[in-house]
Length: 100
Image (cartoon, rainbow, N blue to C red; front, side, top):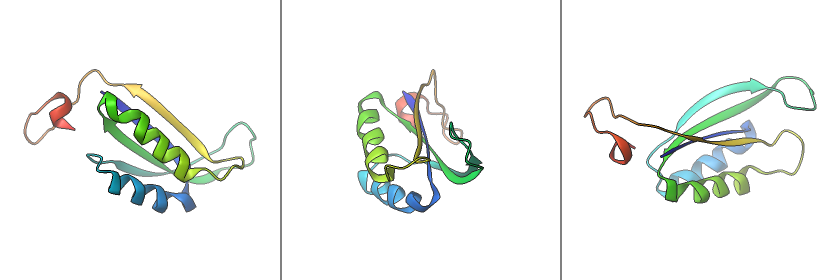
């Protein structure tokens, strides 16, 4: 299992969100964020998207985010894929892929 964290431009978020919802992913968590990158051009408002996914879904999800958030200019954001040891659903006690 993997955790995908994407930080995208605020003005691209709605489009990215629609594409991800239509794709049938299990769910996502959204956080408003501010930050700057290598160019140090001041704090910018961004949106952080967090998704738990099975291994076979990762490439598809990353590609959807990348293609739908890209403007080609500085500040488009980042995507990170992180290994997850375990995931639990609090309500039911399910774990692993069934908890996603």
